Structure formats: C-alpha cells, structure tokens
Length: 448
Ligand code: HEC
Ligand code: HEC
Ligand code: HEC
Ligand code: HEC
Ligand code: HEC
Ligand code: HEC
Ligand code: HEC
Ligand code: HEC
Ligand code: HEC
Image (tube, rainbow, N blue to C red):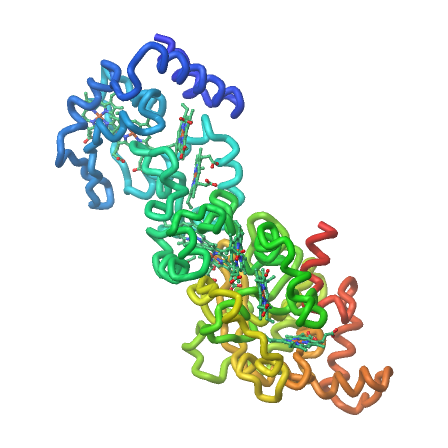
C-alpha cells in the first residue's frame, strides 16, 4: 500500500524535489515487490473497462474522446509502475464512472490534465511555462503543445523523445523536420551519431524560445563548434561583425533565398515570454499579400515615431539581420565546403541578398510576423535612425549617411527628412543614434 500513500502525496502537489523523491521511493518499493511490467489489481480494474477498444465519450463541442487505453504499452512505459492513480487521484473507483462530469473539448481536457505532470516534474514544467509554446497556449493557439502533446501520457517510453524516429517536434513541424533530415546534422544523426544535434539540442525541449529573438542561436552553435570564430577569422575579415549581422544559415544553407529582415526590438524582447511589439501599429496585409511593394521608408518612419511617441516607456528600435527567407531553409545546413565564401555575393551593387526586405513584428507569443517592405528602405535617409547603419559596403550604402560620416559633422539642415531625423534622435531619451546598430542586441543580452 506504499503506492497509495505516495500517490496521495503526489496528488497534494508537494514541492518538486519532494515529489520526485516520493516518486522514486515508490518506484524502488514497487520495483522490489513486483515484476516490472505487471499491473496492480487496481490498474487491472481500471483497464477492465478502459482496455476495450472503441470506448468513447461525447464532449460538449461534439468531439468524441477515445477512452481506450493500451494496458500493455502502459505497463512497459516509464510510468507503468506508478499505476493509474498516480495521475488520476481525482477518480474515486467507488463512484466512477457514475460521477463523471461533462468535458467541454479535447483541448480543454488536455490543458487541464497536463497539470498533473508538474507534481513530479517541476523543472520541466517551469521551463515549459517560460517557452514560446506556453506563451502561445496562453494566447489561445489551439496547436501549441502542452506536456502530453509531446509525451503520450500512457506510453512514455524511455528515450523516445530523443530518437530521430520518434522526436515529438516532427508531428507539428514536419516541413522543418524534412529539411533537417537532409542536412549535415540530420544525416549524421540518422547514422547514429548522437553528437550531431537533433531539434532539442539547438532549441531546447522545454525552454524553447523564438530563435530569431535576442542574440539568436549562434551561441548554441558555438557550444559544439568551439573553434568556429577562429576558423572563419582566417578568411573572413571581422568575422564577429559578420556573425552579428548574418545568421549562420544565411551562409550555410547554400540553396536558400536570402533577405534582410528588420526586426522590431525593445526591452520586452529580453523577457521570457515576449509581449507583442509593433502590434497593432504594423498590422496590415501579411508578407506577400501586399504585393511586391510593401511598406515604404516614409511609412516606416511614421510608424516608428508612433511606436516611440512621447510617454512610451519601452523604446522600439530595429535590428537588421541578413537571413534566409524561411524557417525550412534555415535547417538545410550543408557541408562547409558548400557554404557561401564569395565576398561579392553580398559586397557588390545590386547583390541579390539585399533585394528582398521584410520587417518583423513580434506577434502572439512573440512569434515573428513578417511584412514586406520596399528595399529602398536600406538606402533611404528616412531610415537612418531606425536601421542604424545596417548596410553592406557596395550593396546598400546609405549614401547620405556615408557622406555625413565622412565629413564628420552634420550639415544640410535644409533637407526636411534629415531635419526630422535629427529631431527624432534628439527626442529619444535613452537610445543613442548608434544603439540601433545591429550588435546592440548582443550587448543588451550581456548587460541583462
Ligand atoms: C466500470 C467501467 C469503468 C471502470 C472500472 C473505470 N472506468 Fe473510467 N470511465 C468509464 C466510462 C463509462 C467513462 C465515460 C464516462 C462518461 O461518459 O461521462 C470513463 C471515463 C474516464 C475518464 C475520462 C474523464 C471523465 O471523467 O470522463 C478517465 C480519465 C477515466 N475514466 C479513468 C479511469 C481510471 C483511472 C479508472 C481506475 C481507477 C477507471 N477509469 C475505471 C468506465 C470505467
Ligand atoms: C503519467 C500520468 C498518467 C498515468 C500514470 C495515467 N494517466 Fe490516464 N491520463 C493522463 C493524462 C495527462 C490524460 C489526458 C490526456 C489528454 O490530453 O487527452 C489522461 C487521460 C486518460 C483517459 C481519457 C482518454 C485519453 O486518453 O485522453 C483515460 C480513460 C485514462 N487516462 C485512463 C488511465 C488509466 C486506465 C491508467 C492506468 C492504466 C492511466 N490513465 C494512467 C495521465 C496519466
Ligand atoms: C508520480 C510522479 C510522476 C508523475 C505524476 C509523472 N511522472 Fe514522468 N516520470 C516520473 C519518474 C520517477 C520518471 C523516471 C523514470 C525512470 O527513469 O525510469 C519519469 C520519467 C518521465 C519521462 C522521461 C522518459 C525518458 O525518456 O526517460 C518523461 C518524458 C515523463 N516522465 C513525462 C511525464 C509526463 C508528460 C507526465 C504527465 C502526463 C508525467 N511524466 C507525470 C514520475 C512521474
Ligand atoms: C515541444 C515538445 C515537448 C513538450 C511540450 C514537453 N516536452 Fe518533455 N521532452 C521533450 C523532448 C524532446 C525531450 C528529450 C530532451 C532531451 O533529451 O534533452 C523531453 C524530455 C523530458 C523529460 C526527461 C528528462 C529531461 O528533461 O530530459 C521529462 C521528465 C519531460 N520531458 C517532462 C515534460 C513535462 C512534465 C512537460 C510539460 C510541462 C513536457 N515534458 C513538455 C519534448 C517536450
Ligand atoms: C503539437 C504541435 C507542436 C509540437 C509537437 C511542437 N511544436 Fe513548436 N510550435 C507549434 C506551434 C503551433 C507554434 C507557433 C508557430 C507556428 O504556428 O508555426 C510553434 C512554434 C515553435 C517555435 C517558434 C517559431 C518561430 O517562428 O519563432 C519553435 C522554435 C518551435 N516551435 C520549436 C519546436 C521544437 C524544437 C519542438 C520539439 C521539441 C516543437 N516545436 C514541437 C506547435 C508544435
Ligand atoms: C543546428 C541547430 C538546429 C537544429 C538541429 C534545429 N534547428 Fe530549428 N532553427 C535553428 C535556427 C538557427 C533557427 C533560426 C533561423 C533564422 O534565423 O531564421 C531555427 C528556426 C526554427 C523554427 C522557426 C522557423 C521560422 O519559421 O522562423 C522552428 C519552428 C524550428 N526551428 C524547429 C525545429 C525543429 C522541429 C527541428 C528538428 C526537426 C529543428 N528546428 C532543428 C537551428 C536548429
Ligand atoms: C559569410 C558567410 C558565413 C557565415 C556568416 C558563417 N559561416 Fe561558417 N563557414 C563559411 C564558409 C565559406 C566555410 C568554409 C570555410 C573553408 O573553406 O574552410 C565555413 C565553415 C564553417 C564550419 C566548418 C569549419 C570548421 O572547420 O570549423 C563550421 C562548423 C561553421 N562554418 C559554422 C558556422 C557557424 C556556427 C556560424 C554562425 C555563427 C557560421 N558558420 C557563419 C561561411 C560562413
Ligand atoms: C550538439 C552539437 C552541435 C550543435 C549545437 C551544432 N552542431 Fe554543427 N555539427 C556538429 C557535428 C558533430 C558535426 C559533424 C562533425 C563536424 O564536422 O564537426 C557538425 C557539422 C556542421 C557543419 C558541417 C561542417 C563541415 O566540416 O562540413 C556545419 C556547417 C555546422 N555543423 C553548422 C552548425 C550551425 C550553423 C549550428 C547552429 C545553428 C550548429 N552547427 C550546431 C555538432 C553540432
Ligand atoms: C553573406 C553576405 C556577406 C558575405 C559573403 C561577406 N560579407 Fe562582409 N559584410 C556583410 C554585411 C551584411 C556586413 C555588415 C555591414 C554593416 O553592418 O555595416 C559586412 C561587413 C564587412 C566589412 C566591414 C567590417 C567593418 O569592420 O566595418 C568588411 C571589411 C567585409 N564585410 C569584408 C568582407 C570580405 C572580404 C568578404 C569575403 C571574404 C565578405 N565580407 C563576405 C555581408 C557579407
């Protein structure tokens, strides 16, 4: 009866370490007293009904919930030894199913029931609560995963979440998985080389963040590729600067379309659960729907002024990044011999990478929403304060800015755009003109 004792403890939601300890003690006791895959009489009782195939419950929204549980799979799972009651302590066998209550929908049932996992797995639950997925669940996204979307509650098999065949991410991000599978990492992983990363080695499993926020994932790459900066430095001048303004996939996914993405940032970007930025100011037709024109520089300027109007605490700036055009392309990392090495891919007038520009606001859960913007924005005087000198020599030079820098003083107050620009710069209390420079994100991160 040690089992019921520990179960009740878990049901009372003890502090995490205590819960896991209780669970482990239970595990040890049961492992000593019963063969691993045998079901207790209590569990056999539950299964006397729930083992029957086709058993269903009609839910409030018209869905039907399958009540069929595979007893043998459960017995072989990591939780088999704990018994049904470890997670269903709310069910009183004497009254069930007579006292069963209506259930509104599968989704509400899942979100509610998954809370029980936290009684033993406090660390994972805390990490998950700070993830982009949890932020999306809170925002009402019906597809965002809770514990049981990734770990089937009655069949958690040891090691399944880490295996390429059964990694949970592929059920929802199947297109990305497809791209990953053909990448240098995916091919190695499929060949059994576990040093090569699978989804969670780069993104984490529970504390998944928006990968383009903050400094991005390049520090994760450096975690394994420790000599990467030194190796690039050999042929690439100022490799650190290049790493700050170009994502790794932009050079290492050789077949990808490249674009400049201008990301709106403010201090909220540094928070765990990123709040929307640029919404609703930038709301309009999403990328593509606006035709090939998109926002023009003057509109961008006005929108930035609206965002940073007097009295607004979190000033918004723009971080420019040379990136691939889609999440799928980001995962087609090829062998290093195929990577972009030719300087003129970027450093020449009219370089393809600078012909396509998007602006990203942080939408629900902080997930970026991209809007098209005309490429003139990279050249325009309107953009100086916001783009902060993001330009590749020869390709997108903001000529006016270069002239000013060369002269080392500000002349030409007759130019209205510049005049506005200077007024706008002066009205920003904390942000210096240079602070919108692409590398400010990394500095933010170090300071925070
Ligand atoms: C006598 C057959 C029977 C037994 C034994 C039984 N159940 Fe059920 N169970 C049902 C039926 C029937 C329903 C559907 C009730 C309804 O439609 O409202 C159900 C529903 C459920 C649900 C869905 C949630 C809900 O409240 O409707 C869970 C979870 C559940 N049972 C778990 C268990 C567990 C755990 C045990 C063992 C402690 C168990 N059941 C024993 C027949 C049984
Ligand atoms: C590790 C925790 C855990 C254990 C152990 C467990 N369950 Fe569940 N059970 C859950 C969760 C969580 C859900 C809600 C799943 C979802 O999102 O639909 C659930 C749902 C159910 C349902 C509703 C149908 C469904 O799949 O959603 C039934 C019936 C059920 N459990 C019966 C059982 C029985 C019988 C056992 C023992 C043989 C058992 N459970 C053991 C966590 C557990
Ligand atoms: C009563 C405590 C308890 C509850 C409740 C519980 N677990 Fe566990 N779980 C454990 C223990 C203990 C282990 C370690 C088992 C082992 O190492 O053999 C474990 C292991 C796991 C693993 C690791 C599997 C692997 O690959 O080794 C996952 C994933 C997991 N649980 C998910 C869940 C989910 C999801 C829920 C909620 C539906 C849940 N657990 C509820 C105690 C619990
Ligand atoms: C988006 C999918 C996903 C969600 C949601 C998720 N997990 Fe996991 N979980 C994984 C993956 C992938 C692994 C394997 C990670 C690894 O080995 O580093 C894992 C591993 C685990 C483990 C084994 C120990 C560890 O940390 O590696 C436990 C326990 C666990 N998860 C519990 C939970 C609980 C509890 C929740 C809900 C709060 C949850 N998971 C939500 C994907 C997920
Ligand atoms: C049950 C479905 C589901 C599963 C399983 C799942 N995700 Fe997600 N994930 C989503 C949804 C929905 C979004 C919201 C963005 C979208 O609609 O594409 C999202 C967003 C993300 C984002 C942020 C996207 C962005 O544009 O910034 C990342 C990163 C991510 N998931 C990684 C993972 C990883 C890694 C795993 C496995 C450990 C995983 N997901 C498992 C549904 C899922
Ligand atoms: C080698 C590290 C690495 C691995 C392995 C990896 N990713 Fe990513 N992932 C990234 C990077 C880097 C980005 C950001 C790309 C960018 O800058 O646009 C990203 C972006 C994403 C996004 C956001 C896509 C978007 O539309 O912006 C999702 C979702 C995602 N990854 C899911 C996954 C899944 C699922 C897997 C496993 C099949 C996976 N990732 C494997 C590094 C990785
Ligand atoms: C400007 C384009 C460019 C960028 C940006 C870039 N790389 Fe590279 N990388 C290359 C090229 C080209 C090679 C092959 C160099 C050679 O010929 O030896 C290479 C080689 C590599 C190699 C294998 C070389 C080795 O021996 O270590 C790794 C690993 C690598 N890069 C990782 C990264 C990571 C991580 C990032 C992001 C922080 C990154 N690269 C950013 C172009 C780039
Ligand atoms: C968990 C460790 C790990 C992480 C994280 C990781 N890699 Fe790798 N990567 C490897 C291993 C192992 C190989 C194959 C052996 C090698 O060439 O170093 C590899 C190979 C590569 C290669 C091919 C090198 C060649 O010589 O052809 C490139 C390019 C690369 N990785 C880029 C990246 C980028 C970009 C990231 C981050 C988005 C990243 N890696 C994250 C482990 C990792
Ligand atoms: C994938 C595109 C890309 C490739 C390939 C590339 N660069 Fe760059 N480079 C950039 C961008 C973007 C900047 C940043 C400009 C800015 O923000 O001021 C930059 C900046 C520079 C700078 C200015 C550094 C400074 O200290 O201000 C130099 C010099 C430079 N690149 C030289 C090279 C050389 C030489 C090569 C080839 C070996 C090369 N780049 C390859 C995109 C690229």
